[in-house]
Length: 235
Image: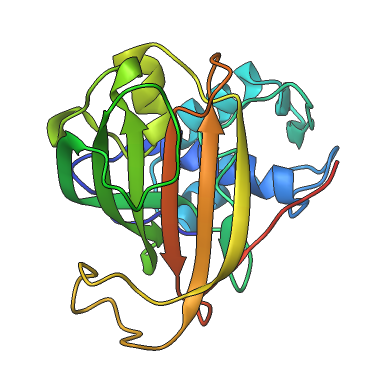
């Protein structure tokens, strides 16, 4: 496991680390009851300090994902109740896992264009365009539309995790999402160095709900199938 480089809008490093471990637990790469390596060994392998690692482990313990036994070590304790910032992020590296992070490309509040499907109750939405990473690998570009009925956002209010931003800045939480996965072509605003040119890519349309009866967010994600795969686990 390797942590990605820090972006200006990145989550604190100990949160990044606990999220990386939580994703590995959810994926079954770390099994219930498994004993983690000694903390000093883990810190070295993750390229972090002992202090940061211990804060990450304490965060996992608070979520019910870790049992710390004095004199024995740290043991995975899988919990169905644990919430992750990236619980709904379905892209993983081909080798498995990877911590999501994002680079903001543009944020604008505007009238909804005619080509968008119906969602929300307002005529306007915040449009966010980002490049997505897993660890330090650029794997996707995405465009998220958030209905202004729940508030407006600007680039300086975003963090790597939009769902955390929604909770902290706008005081709501995405409770469910519906994905439609197919094949597409990169949008014209894709950064020139993204790397797959005009080749076909994976394409995901997502509708997301909070506590309203109608979806309040619509997003489109184009991902590089030579680097990432869409994963849905049934529990």
